[in-house]
Each structure stands twice: as C-alpha cells, then as structure tokens.
Length: 511
Image (cartoon, rainbow, N blue to C red; front, side):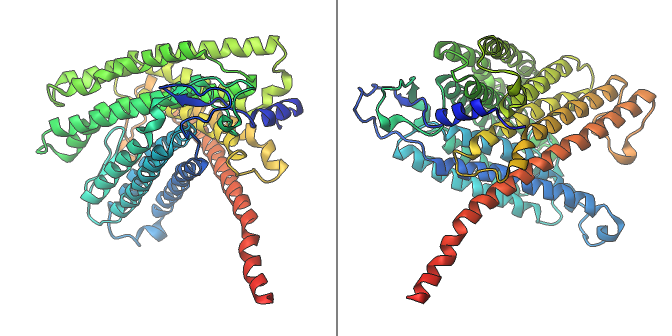
C-alpha cells in the first residue's frame, strides 16, 4: 500500500524545493545572498535519534517490568522500589523525552544562522546529559519514586537534576535565532541558496514557533512554581504542585507540534500550504495567548485553589476551540483537493492522509472524553491517553516523511507497504484503549488502582477493562512495528557507510 505513482513523483519534485524563512529585518533581492541562513539536518537527525531512542529504551523498560514480576526473576532484585523507579523512567522517556525531542527535531527544520546552530547543538548536548542523569538516578537504591501528574520523578538529586538538565537543554534548542526569522514564500525564481530539500511552509513555521514559545512559558511556570511551593511538603504533594501548572502548558506545546505535523502532512499531500500566513498567525496566537497568564497564576502560591483551578480551566477551554477550527479547515482543504483531482482513491492509503485521519480521530475522542469528566475515575486517563495518542500517531506518520530527506531510507518494499497499517494499528488501538477506559469510568471504575487495589463491582467495569486490554494490545503491536521500522532504517544507513571503513584499511595494506 504505497503512495500512488503520480503522487510519489510529485512528492520527490517537492522535496527539491522549500519555503525559505528569511530574516525579519529585510528580505534579499533575487540573486542576493541572505544572512547566512541554512538548515543543519545533522541537528534534526540527532534530535530524532534521541526521540526514537528514548522510545526504544522505554519499551525495554516496560519489558523489564513484566519480566521482573515473574517469580524466577523477582528474587534477583533486593530493592522493592527498583521496578517502580523503572516505571517512572519509562513514563518520562515515553512521554517527556519522546515528545519534546521530536518537537525539537521538527523545530530544527527552520533555518537559522551559525550562532543558532551552535546554541542548538549545545542545548542538545545538555539535554542528552540530562537523560543520562535520569537513567543514573534510577539506579540509586532505596530512593522513592513519585508518580506526580505530568512529570513523575524519583526523589533523589541525580534524577531531579537530570530532568532539569533535559528541560534546560531543550530550552536552548527552542529559543535561538530560528524564533526571530520571518516566513516568506519562495517562488520558482528565488535564488538557489534558499532552496532546501524539505518543504516547510509559513503556516508550519508559525506552528513550530508557537511550540517553542509555549515551551518557554511552561519552563517559566515550572520555575515560578518551584519558588512558590513550600519544600516542607511531603514529596508527592510537593512535586505534584511544582509540575501541575507547567505540565498543563506543556500540553499546549504538544498540541502546537501536532498541528504543525498536520499542516506538514497535508501541505505535502495537497502540494500547497493549508493555512495562509495571516490565518496561521491569528489562530496560533489565539492558542498561545490564554496560557501566557500561566506564571501569574502562581502569584498567590501553589497551595491555593486559584493555582489548581486556573490551570484546569485553561485546559478545558484554552485548547479545543483553535484545534477544532484548524481541523475543520484541514477537512475543507482535503475536500477541495478531492474535487479538484489533486487527491484520489489511491491516496486513501497514503501514510500522510492516514496519519492525519488517525490523529484527528484521537483528538476528537480525547475532547469528547475530557468534556465527560465528572469525577475522579478512569474517564480521566481515557481522555489523557487519547490526547497523547493523537500526538504520538502524528509524530509517527511524519517520521516516515522525514526519513528519506534525512538519509534514512526504509529498506525494502514490503516494509513500506506496512506503513499505513502500522499507523492504523496504533491509532485504532489507542481509540479502543481509551474507549475501554471511558466505559469503565462511566461505571465508576477507580483511577490509579492496580492489582488487588482494583475492585470490579459491575459488568460495565469488567467490559471496560476487557475493551481497554484489547485496544492496548493492538496499540502495542503498532508501536512495536514502528520501532522495528526505525531500527531497520537505522541499520540501512549504517550499512551504507560500513564498506568505507572496511575498504580503507584494506587499501592501505595492499599499498
């Protein structure tokens, strides 16, 4: 199930052109060099590698959690908190590191000058040190895991310091010269120096810059919350309050990155930008603006109701309206493309269209479940898993679009045919998983109750758990298939460069 032959030719032609992001001060005249702006794709490859590597390691940790509960192996680990610490690391790698490393990889597609490349490179190095510190902090015995919302941590200085280093490092990746260049469309007569092998339209650039600004607001909120939260509180309450506000704003950054991917996928499919530059600026300003008050909500401290209720209201009413508007525009543009013959029946299997459809379906599911929350039950994790699933499946879909331009070709036609199926497996599985959670919540199934703590009191709860389990298995199958494809792509790139290392010593010995 590959992209149609016509669309493949068009896509390869499009890959030879792009929209340049020019400086704010002035745009160069035709034939004149710009202010040394370029895209350093090595930064994209590194960030993408960290994102996918964190997913792989998180998967290994989940396997360790399963094996560690088996009677034969459980006696090998004397520390009873070890596997709970692995659970915390698994969550942080699979959500925090995966999401924001991938968002940083997308952001690096925006051109910048040499200084911005250097700042990004330094920030990425700091973020990698942070991830290593998180892994090291997990191994410190007898330290307690804290399952706080948004950013669970292990209560020791090494792990918490690693989380801080990762956040600070990515802040350097986001806040640099790329944030201050102006998006302008480039015609066929533009100077050759501004053409790049990947298309980033002005609306995509606006979405990515919104991601960076939302991340900055989230980091500011974290900092102010940390200063305003009494350290005398019990660890669970302390970290919950520190990460509550900024964690809400981080979801705005996730959503902006997801919308950037929607626009990137559909502009590649439709051969034109989805939003006009002005419309994009207005809509993404409306998405970001309400959340700029995030740091101000901590002025009366983090213990009071203003802090918790204020961010809850921002989550309820500050994201959905803009996302729904952009979704409707995307659907209208697809309808126009269908009527105009730009896309046809063969494109229904196109990974770009399948990826958008899966992400949009999960987004709507998450919104409906969020609006149905009334009490603290499994409706909350149902909403949450649908929302993060929407971001994840969008990132998976655009990864396949990025591989070839970044020098990571998918080996073999068979795997390429599986791409739409992988996206469907993960997306459909996540929808079923969330629906199962929601069914249980509608019948009163308790949140954060596991094993013997979980009491099933009705048939509805039992059915909900069964549906959730089936959906989870389907989603896991889709996730494993994605990781397999990424490993194969990495092997293909590595194998292509391997003969050079073998032949050089051989040539010297023959000489």
